[in-house]
Length: 298
Ligand SMILES: NC(=O)c1ccc[n+]([C@@H]2O[C@H](COP(=O)([O-])OP(=O)(O)OC[C@H]3O[C@@H](n4cnc5c(N)ncnc54)[C@H](OP(=O)(O)O)[C@@H]3O)[C@@H](O)[C@H]2O)c1
Image (cartoon, rainbow, N blue to C red; front, side, top):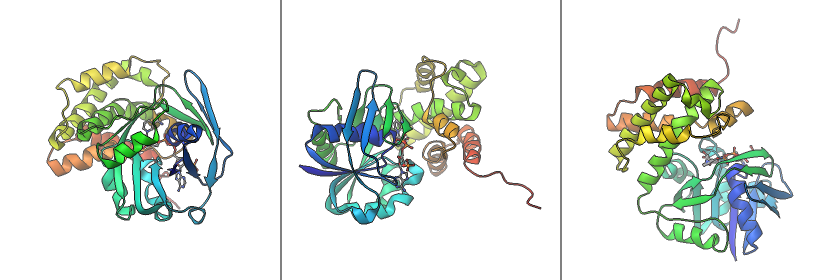
């Protein structure tokens, strides 16, 4: 029986935590700010639920075999005290986050533990503490290695496929193209994915993805020449009211996870000497949503 900590028991922590709790094969602790009794995940086919064990502060936690880190990218520094308590000699930290800088973001707090970057394929929303709506299939794509194999063993016998990849660069940049294709436009206009049917908005989104793909290719990701056209076509083939996590966060008044997305494209583009003017402009606007209104104070 492995000891597992779910650090960030929101939408993704809920979806992937509840499977481990239900399996009964592991000793699972949710690391939370406010304890809950149960996880309830509504999938398109079923409701999956389980009683849960919680730790409400790092002083209640001890070293585990695996941390499933599922806080938002900008929340990683806040959970440093949790990581300090949870990481022991052989702990694996699986980073279930969007973006392309999983290691850079987490290693400074991981105290030498093995950090496994993971692409998470699963649309999900947090409805209330411990209550999640999972709108599609749930799959994990970790970078191949010891940690990925351990993660796969945790999910054996569950409905979650764990598909390690030897080309994490391509997997993570392809996911970033997807996130950048719809997230910024929906969050900035406060409209669902139907906004991608407006021709000028669609062209802006293609431009954002083109820049993202150019930076990704410079980093070694293998992305098709027409990735922007195909991404926007696929993203708008959805219910016009369908949301993105950026839009959900904006509507809930929570900080938007812009730094790991448009921020990463601008940052890495600058390092590589690749211009990213559209991502820079959109990033400035998204970041502005995250800060209080500035102006004359007297
Ligand atoms: N949702 C999706 O559809 C989806 C799909 C693929 C990938 N992702 C990625 O997965 C990652 C997680 O996203 P999410 O949608 O699951 O976010 P989320 O629903 O906002 O969940 C984040 C969780 O982290 C917790 N948290 C934040 N700071 C904490 C702290 N200091 N101590 C303890 N808990 C803390 C929050 O707790 P509180 O409730 O106390 O705030 C919340 O439960 C992101 O990188 C996202 O981009 C999301």
